[in-house]
Length: 62
Length: 305
Image (cartoon, rainbow over all chains, first blue to last red; front, side):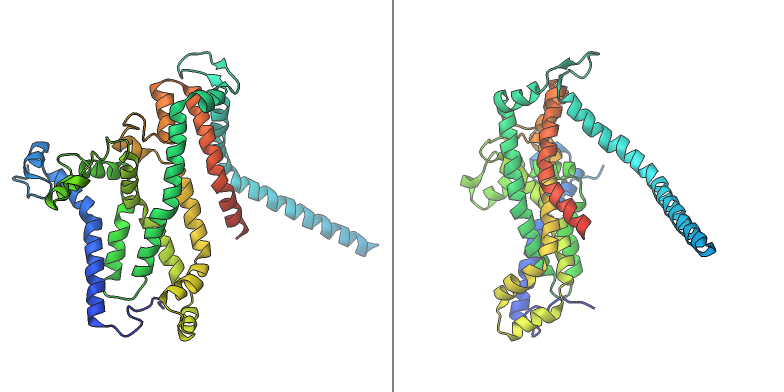
């Protein structure tokens, strides 16, 4: 049995729901940026990192 | 006469059984109690003992100085005051920032919607990383030229907001705190979510029927029923914030110019870098006393429950 409430108090309004998802997804995306940095840092050498920036795809996976 | 003898014998048997039960309880408790005494209690008292000596950690003879280390700390050790101030700053902010974000996320994610479990996992994920890893990740992000944050500010045309995040004394501690917050939000969020799910829906429904708006329902219905959870969260957060060490060590090493020292790091530097074991353990004792301020009420509360 769940005690959670529904968004919009039971009657979901599409615009409100879309805004809710957009906001939450944006925040979640920002929240995961450090994890992406961790992955990208692990896949590139310091030199490549300096030359191509954080989010460029690594040239090779050696 | 025989009846009286029987009664005496029954009382004796009961007493004998009670003593036996108590003995068995102590025997079962003994292994854990011995480990606790050796691993926790003995080092604690040994630290207090060491704090009364001047010792480099190697010499066979320790020089008795009594309360000299404490006097030196409080009157002649400028960095100790910086570390104490930073620890208090860290503790106070920790009570509001990660706890507040955790509560807000819990309220948001307690609603019924598709994908709620996914979002809960996303926001909880940083909490499973070690603080050292978090420090390394954010250390990269704060890099003045290669770091994501300054690159993003550049990209957005906000060059004026660029900082040397970890080497500018005005911002370094706050920058480290932001990194720690990213890690520390998960646990309060989880605890508040559990608390929210134990609130009877009928009370919120009744408040809604009575005309309470969303804010009033939160302030007058939800929050009072989260009192227990809030107490637990605050106690855990306060105790953890006093123990802060690893993320500062990894990200700034206490610098620049000792401006991000906290009691944990300063204790380490005095003990292992300066070989002032007595002075270092004196900080440990001060830290222990500060922790007791939160630990005693919390433990008493939990024991009473």
